[in-house]
Length: 351
Image 1 (tube, rainbow, N blue to C red):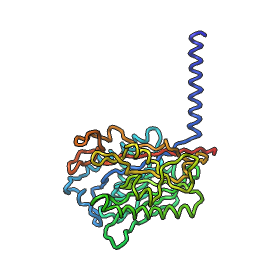
Image 2: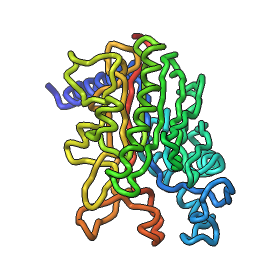
Image 3: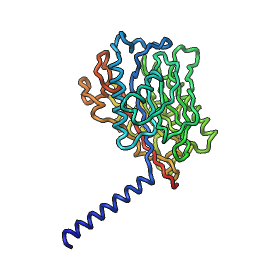
Image 4: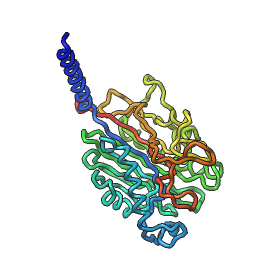
């Protein structure tokens, strides 16, 4: 075969393959969801109802407008890097102080070109840090939302973040129930604080049960910083989020922890004393793992985003650790003490 003919044949083959890939991408479109604890994203305004003095002008951390703007730019950079060529549909954020901080992030940072809107409620957390959901208004359409309080029993004075519940639809009318969480911290010790996370998990489980009872095979997406690992009691026993079984054993009305495998492989979104662990988790109902549905995800679609710019050398324990805004009290202009986790859902209009 002449060289020109061979080259022409090769080009035609590549063109056909490209068309096939484009056709598959058109049939299966990506719905990306990010979960990110951005660590102390405080504005510079004094809130008299919370203890935010640490992050005010003149406070002990030396927080100011320049550092605030740098924090916004860093959050936007991490999200844009995950977005690549496809705008994420949903972004669950933990440790956000206020509506002002969210307005500035979505309107005046590099994220402004994405056109995000947000859902946020002020929670009773003593420091004033909340959870919030950013959504792309052409890809997700909120129907209802509410803040679900986590009130500790036995007159305990401590307060914690509410659970944010959002019900909405995708662009093809698939209903999605989103539950965004930030469980109580391990401050005071893991064992001493465990009962608070167990209680938060029980409140979350009650919400899940109500969705299973009121909807037929609901699409439930749970995410956030749980301050516990996938193998801990609050997640395994109280919330009942199981590791992924074989496809043939999937149940539509059970919860499955998609980061369980990453955790058992030694990966993590957070590093404590040289050990990585998945505090940040994405959990779904079994119906979202059914590939016969129009809207679904797969085990391989969960990802830990550990780009080099989000990490720094760990001089004490070796290896790397998340590149934080502050290390102790020393400002270093980093991103967060957590790494983002993201998941891709797929939907086809023809199913």
